[in-house]
Length: 343
Length: 240
Image: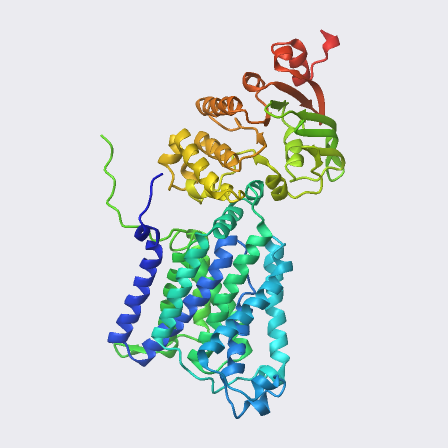
């Protein structure tokens, strides 16, 4: 059997780590506060989109509800770490151990991720028995339910009001470390028995079942792992921005993260990461255009909302012209010399 | 008998596709179900594999009932389906296609050894081990589909239309493989339209038309007989 070296096998992960490290190093060396913020935000999105990829990419089932776990992770961390003086008054519905205590950041992050994961496993159990559009609509229902519950649970989440004063500890390097761990975990999953079985079922469910693949079980495993990393993304998001509201984790976030996955190529891990890098860059450029700039004495400023329109058009173009996304569903392959044609 | 199909009826909605058929397969035997398009052959196969639910009749595997089992349960019992049109996992590599099939087994060491011996037996799969399976030719894909089925180490392998859509050269390749499985003592139930091809590998044949079994018997008794052709093509024997 033709064997690949261990380095060759993990090359797709190393290549992605290297790409992100170069971006962070460049931002550290040449960037200022704004660029650092943009890069940190993009790295948090890498965690979320790669988390999304673990389920969507491997199962082929489009999930509109995964961002709910970002909200669940973010709020769980906020309850444990935020605002010791305001919490007893503003969040009076919290259990006493959360209301009157503030916990360390790291254990809070871990427990928040565990909370999101357990909820995902419970919610996913019935949903993962569905296939195709029915499964996608069910995930959308999850998004709507979480949004409505958190948006109206005033004594626990402050409803649709912003939660402010969240400790900010997520910088570029913390986000890079979490993105690196997420990428490694996603790759390990896709190469695992469960990941391969699920990708086989994505390709042909009947043939996969014929070789004994339990499709609902494999989907549930992917959904749960995916939710863990999306929950982590929520924790990072909250502690990067320092202010959250439930509407941060609704349709806009769902749209942008799915757009990143589709534009990069949702059938590969590289696609998830490249999609974030490409779209985060585009978003920042469009933001600059929205703010306005001067070229040769001419002031250029785009109307508000142009970001969403342009991103929508880019997504449409990719879907029509390159359905496999920018990476075409391929991973970064080991750099090997081109084969010479046989004489 | 390893497989007993008794008075099976399968419907698509209200339309009966298979009506009151009985088929059996003994261990180590190769049984072929032949018939023209729309005869109900593949429907029968899919019902045995757990993909379709029969509306009437009994399906027994090693004496135990198959009805109500999902297709993955059926696979775990030891029935492997090689579906019509190959249906390999095209974006997965040849290696991944084979490994997914081996995950059903608990004896991981034996599965790894079987994989090694399969690769020795089919050098093309070894050569293309890390290539996407979708890049294989039609014949190579059929070999991969059969190899995938073999890796589950089935007690009974169901092969649906193995020659469908293949060039004659590739059909030769596939039937050579099926003959070698027969020599290895594997139990096979093959569904096929190509009457001449199956007569070379089968022990017994069932001829289906319009959802019913029209004729059955051993290859020795039926080969070249007018009765066989009449049953296959639906000629009225009395009209001649």
